[in-house]
Amino acid sequence: MLSPVVVVAVSGALAAGAVVLATGSPVAWWWLAICAAASLPVVVWFGAHGRLFEPLPLLALVSAIFFVGRPLQLFVDWRDLYSYFRPRTEVGDLVLLEGQEVALFVSQRLGEPLATALGRASGACALFLVLLLAGYRLGVTLGLGRRLGTLRPGRPINQAAAIGLALAIGFAAQAAIVIRAGGPVQSIETANAQAALSDSFVLFFLAGFAPAALAVWVAWRKPSDRREWVALGLCVAAVCGFFVVAGSRARVLILLLALAVIVNYLRRRWRVRELVVGAALFLAFVSSFVVFRNLAGDGSLRKATEESARHVLDQRVILNDTTSYDQVLFATTLYGRNLRHERGRFLLDGVRSYVPRKIDAGKPEGGDILFRRAVWGERFAAGRPPTAVGDLYIDFGFPGVAIGALLIGVFCHALLGLLRGTGPGREYRIALYALLLTVLYELVADTFSIALGFTLTLVVPFLIAVHLFGRLPRLAGARTAA
Image 1 (cartoon, rainbow, N blue to C red):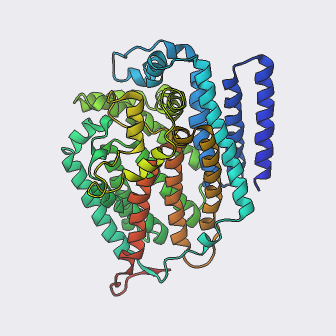
Image 2: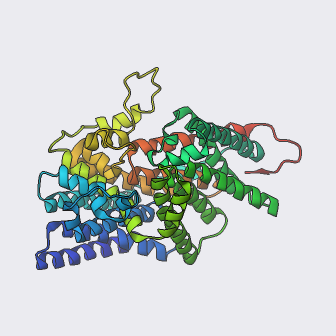
Image 3: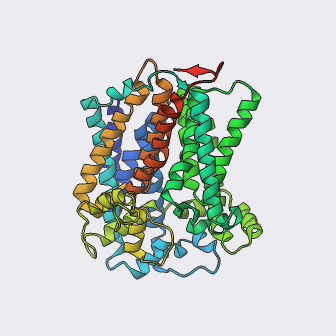
């Protein structure tokens, strides 16, 4: 099934490369052409076959946005990267490339020609995408994932207990996080530094029961009347509202993506026009939310609201907020030259960051924080996730990118076993697939430590809700499902 995509991708890469070489363009354009050829045909082919919610096309779409769209902007407007200036307004660093961190990095930290650094960063992205395809093809050959198709929760679960208890725990923890951050207003005003997201890991683990409960609800129960539809909608809005107050648009995307995947495979397939409208609405939310979050810190929520309304679907804000490639540029420029490769310690520290401090008193912080400190020290507050490409390069250079991408590709195909399994337990497999798909997205788009955090705070609460809460005795007349 992948052969047509591979043929188109390879042919496109060769054709684009021939044009690049013939015109004498910098080698960075050659790598950018390979990134485009290895991602865009995958999105088009799987989309035409109604399979956009599978792992490979999802990662291809993310890569097209992060590793093709953003670098293309930098390649075209490269002169702006040499003229960094501190914007006079909080919106300036969102609409002007000259006010971006990447311009600050080029003007202050880059000790080599920009074309060389861009070529190395795009080369790492191209290597990752090509080997990702190869790993997916290897997964097809190995036939992994068959055992995942047999997973099931056992006997029918107590839906009311699984959903009700998980929601109660999750909402209580979310309320506690907001209160500890100083309340909703204070949390919003400090959203740019994501102060609420820096709270106790235990509280965030407990808060993860709320989205896990929604996954159980959407997978096992189709609302039977208007009241239940309203209740479900309010719960989704409440969880999304918590993420907004905490300053994380990514967590809103993660929740909505997981629920959309469950609906797609258990209820009805999404139409292309519905997905396009949904994507447009989310981009509108992202562009306005980013502006609002940047301005809310000055204490004027009214001004932040008015300004965010002016930048709905502002392409400058959207492009300048998509900075994953920038982190790859930082990683591939510094490590192996100014800094030594970590040789596995960066990924290991991502695991250690979740070990209780009573066990590991000297444990490091998450990978995004460690990387931000390596690049900027304490100059900025929030973390800077280097993406899977950066993670692998920081530890092992180009060989690590190649091997890691191959393994991720194999995992992508193995994950399809949850979709293709038949028989009892389909609700369980699809819900688990949706949550693991979001973890896979976080692994590639952010960093390993964040992906591990989502596993611990989303997948684990889901398993507890199903296998522990769902095993409690049912009340008389309660509905059951396999």
